[in-house]
Image 1 (tube, rainbow, N blue to C red):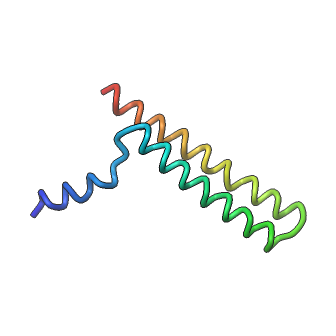
Image 2 (tube, rainbow, N blue to C red; image 1 turned 90 degrees about the horizontal axis):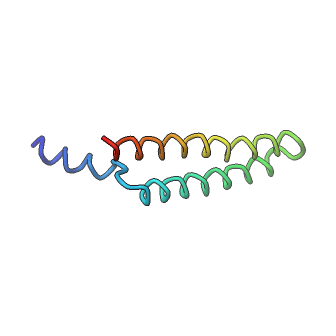
Length: 75
């Protein structure tokens, strides 16, 4: 039974840089979509500030993901 869960959980492990970039791309698309909703919901400077924060969060998460992939490859 544990072997099945181990195989299933390995599907969610990012092993290569290609997988990391695919995940970061998806996160980026979602962040920009959310930012567009913020622009419609909060017109003006507040909406633009919220729009800017969404991709910045993806940049930080993407750097962490890439760093983790590179670190796991070197071990």
